[in-house]
Image (tube, rainbow, N blue to C red; front, top):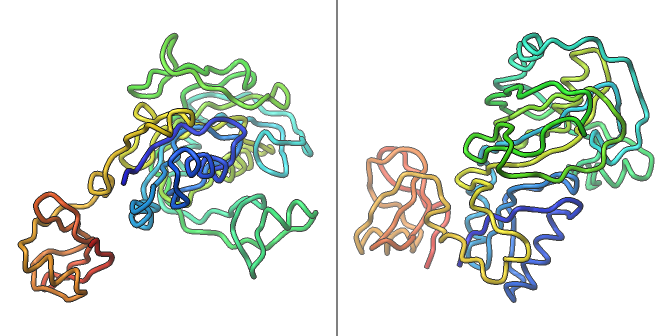
Length: 308
């Protein structure tokens, strides 16, 4: 059964897309590998039927984004849902200095998640508490930001580019045009191309970049252009879900491959630990078919998940 990359439209939750996929594919077994906020668009990876087995191996995939960071206005959700609850004058922005600042945010770091997030503390969802007027003490999480490239500084979201060259996701006259949420006002906006590790919140990054500049900030728009092996160029629309072919489980797993013989495949499916010199996580195949995902210690293989 396939793994399908969908181009999530604006104003749908990730769960909305999963529900549409369930109806379109005639199955209740649909999962996704990483939530995308309602006001964000772009790549949402769905796993259908038996492919839900591979979700656990894809949740740690790195992700690429285009982010419109609006400075001088803060919102409770840290995005364009609003309302604006804090404003400040933004100092003159020099692109080179902004890029230097963005460079300080790359690498491993601790990031405090947004109050409006699906994180649970003591059995409570942070966003549910936030909507009821409360706050939770959300501990900082270890994340990695691989790169942040400033593509431009603009007077506001509406003045910033929305059409991009899909080869490198830089602004272009023709290419892929995105729909962003309505702007909350004309606030100086940074257009940033970001590559981040799993668990990184771009809304938190917007907040933190603003704080480093001494002003409140929010995410005026967000597009996810890549998740692991899946690029937006190959994503299908929600309307195309019924006939989408997707790709098979094996192609979805980004690990080196061990080709097994019949005996090794049988032992792995029985939960045994056959001898092998491989180290680290691998995919095991037999005749091109997926047998298992394993962890090797240089002496033997331990099954993480097996396929019949």
